[in-house]
Image (cartoon, rainbow, N blue to C red; front, side, top):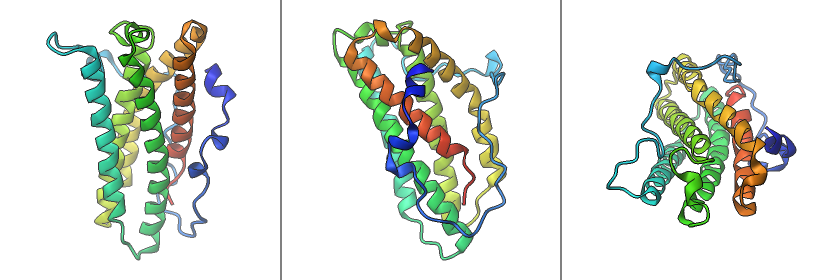
Length: 226
């Protein structure tokens, strides 16, 4: 997408640079989460319960978006707390923990960028863009769903690392299972990028930062652990 292409993820956040040289490689070097062009989930498995989606009549759009953002932020915080409990003297486990912390740093920045973008729903000028069927809602819904899925997956890995029993096969499977959501987000992002000139300047800048944060996190997520 154009906006994302103009931003060099390596220049966005220093947290995404290598934390340290790791001498021990884990046996999960074949992790691959890069998108395949046809990685679409069959319609019968599509989730419809994320972000705005089916908004209950008794709840306002603003309340719903705020609650979804707060839930995601809380999930990221729980992941950070689990990572704070790391206390391994095993070299391989320590290498994986350092790799996971790097990803969590990028994830936190993505969550913040998503929350900043969704905050524009509180503005009367921008509100209709976030309503079901609005210009930005399909993109934000897909990004939110994918980020929540990956956060849950990394939290489970963090718990396993604390127990010194990481299941790398399950990690690969869960990340691969979320790729159809990322594919939808990427497609919606490309559509949104084509009409970026119709967006208010402040919202367009926030979305550009979100594009960059996603690119950084996706790059980190695709790297081998350890």
